[in-house]
Image 1 (cartoon, chains in turn green, cyan):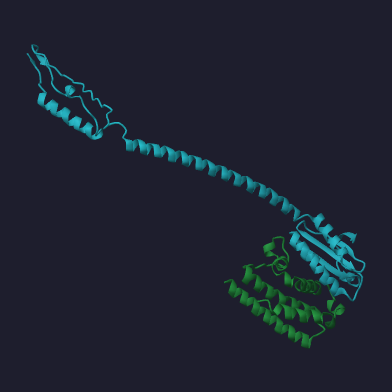
Image 2 (cartoon, one colour; image 1 turned 90 degrees about the vertical axis):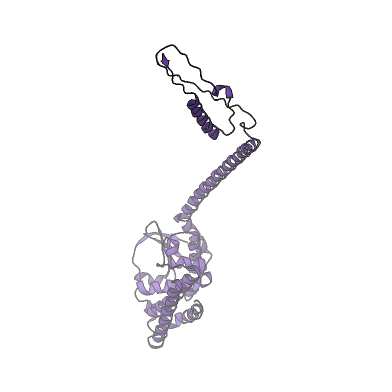
Length: 125
Length: 208
């Protein structure tokens, strides 16, 4: 069951990556959505790995119950991905909840971040 | 004239059958023959006399009836095994008591550890210490109004073109907070030019 769900997360991640490539190509000024979609590309990868390797299915980014806190579980169980994952999480939150992110941050500011994330999280499955 | 019912043969038969019953119950029973033979009666009076005869059964302890060597040996083994069993049960019980004592100590330690993992003051001290080791331009901490289960802060820095480097450095600090504490952790880095986009819900401002 968890293997099937894990595969579904990989598929969702691929779907997000396809959309990411579209918006980078066609809407590069929408850095708020570019960073957000990149984050959710990474999120579904780590979710798949947490399910597959640890049978864990956290439902929140942060929660006082460690088993439900995806951020904590990435830090504890997938520490090699933590720094990039945290950066994406941090920036996507700012992009979603604080106005005018796209006016402060342009595509060149986050280009390396996006490319590195795509390369790194592609290997998480 | 007394008619005496002379039980004689019938009575003896009856006695013998009861003795056989007794022998069945006490297979090694030895009965004195003299108690079982002969019945005497009186004559000269008319009436009905009922004689009762008390039969005393002696069961002598002989080599056939006493506890046999096998039985004594079995009894001895039983007592020894039972003693061993009780000793083992006592040892097991003492081990279980020790286990329970250790578990109680562990629970106490666990309780202390859990309290430590939700110690906000300690978490804040750690955060300040770690932020000092990162080259952040003019950092300031804003503690936000939160629930007891949350640890929410803003780290405010001067505008810098090294923003993403600062953010990556902060990731290791936040990671350490995750490892050591059980809060909902929200430590957000802002450049001063972004402050206008932030809602004011600051509980306290602290210099780093």
